Length: 101
Picture 1: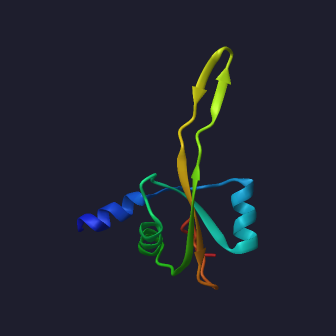
Picture 2: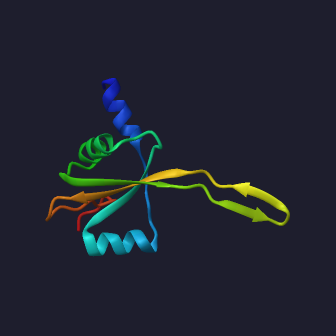
């Protein structure tokens, strides 16, 4: 495995499962992933195509800013992270469960 292929295997961290990502998936046929903070659109597209064997039509990336949180009198800060909205070619889908539908 080349160094570039190893890098692509580390770009996608996890799928984002939330109400908003579910609505986006149903309405616009997009899948939302948490990605590395140094990843770009081209790496995300190549990683999704390589890992799930699908054709990606569009990738949009959003930087999620860190939130300040309070616990009693102690202030803390969550980490900033990056997410990618991935649009797939019509008629294709990613099955995360690995079972036949």
